Image (cartoon, rainbow, N blue to C red):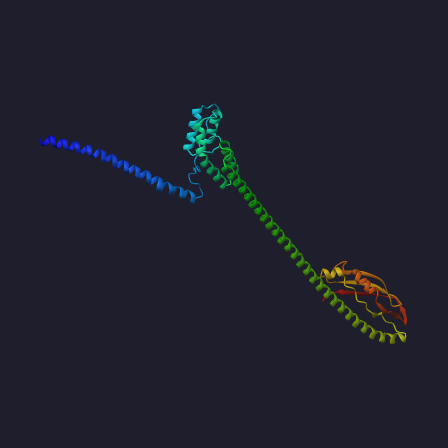
Length: 346
């Protein structure tokens, strides 16, 4: 009797526990669903918004799209709808070209313009597709954005969202053009600045070289003037000595003596300009004839160092010298002489 009672009690307890377990499981499921919609999903949308994405925008970056079906034009209505649903599940609403949900649904409407399934699907996914196109605009993938906008226009040509997307696409294109133009202008300005700096440097170097050349020319001219003054002074001293000697010689000549020619006027040579510029010095040895009248004739260069630099200046100077002619028994006679003309800058 006790055994039967215990068995009956156990069966009754199991019957009570089973409905309670089911109820608890249902409550947990409801709480999980509520947590998803009220906590997890809003949080995910917020994170997506913070990273620049659009809420509910499918993220396809880095996902390798499957190859498009072969011969789409020959596919049946059911095959096209199946491919469209597959593309929606894989978040291929507008891309890639030729293998996305919108193109499959539009192909269904081409075959069956009144197909409600395709029309409803395009209408329901249009906002998400617009978000995808907007993301392409933000990424400045303008060609892809234009393709997606054109695809959206085939689904709903009168939708005002298309106007907004086209305006934004146009604005972004103009902004990019302005940025490129500014970058190009900046590059040109940098090139012009570099060219001007190079030109200024060349001009500065030229002016510095001209200034240095002028200073060197002035220095050589000053040395030439000093050499000319020294030569003039030496000639003056030599002329004075000759005058003194002439006095004695004249006295001797007055009594019928014999003596050599005496220099009365020494004309200093002109220092050649080319030699001054080249900072050259040297000497010239000449022979010449002193006429009975005391003039110089037949001047010849017998040696020079360096050759052909000071020859002309030496011969021209000696040709202008004046002598008291040599005498023999009191009578003026022609005589020969040889002199070394020295050219020195200082």
